[in-house]
Amino acid sequence: MNNNGKSEKVLQLETFLVVNKENFKSIYPDYVSIETRFPMFIYVKMSDEQEIRRISQRENLDSLYLDLSIVLKWNDEKLLDTNLFELNLWEDLIEAAEVLSKEKSCKVRLGVQTVMLSVEESLQGEVNWIVHDELEVNDIYFKVKLHDKNLLLKTIIDGGISFYSTLIEYKFPNTDYIEYCLNRLKNITI
Picture (cartoon, rainbow, N blue to C red):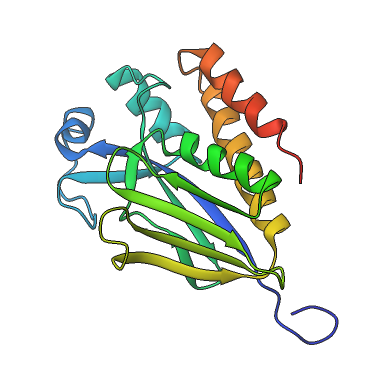
């Protein structure tokens, strides 16, 4: 609650590395059960340094080819969740933030599937966030109305900077690519 007694809207963002369960078992042979929504994959928080380092050393992960899932919530409303995971999903969010920082709307494909992110700012300043199937536009995965475009952009920028800075800290290869993505994020103006 803020000083006026109104509850504040909060955007939360977290990035997960998505790993094939069979690969995970090779890293942790003694691991018996893995709770996941999808039986073939597990999600490891990028903030879990010990696990990410262990997986990256065993799997020779390359920053150019990471399967990622991003959970983005506006209080209890989901803008993205673990149902969507894609190769280098952050690149698509960077593109959306770059366009949205200059325009009133943007459409960006999320990954290589037929999933589209459509964001549009209304005349009243509200932001309509819709994640839908590109071919079947009535198949909507997420639909949220936000009241603060700047908060959305700031959350995406800060989350992306944190993600790519973590890759540098964990010594992922292809630092030129990581620096390129960081610079794109840092050059977005709100």
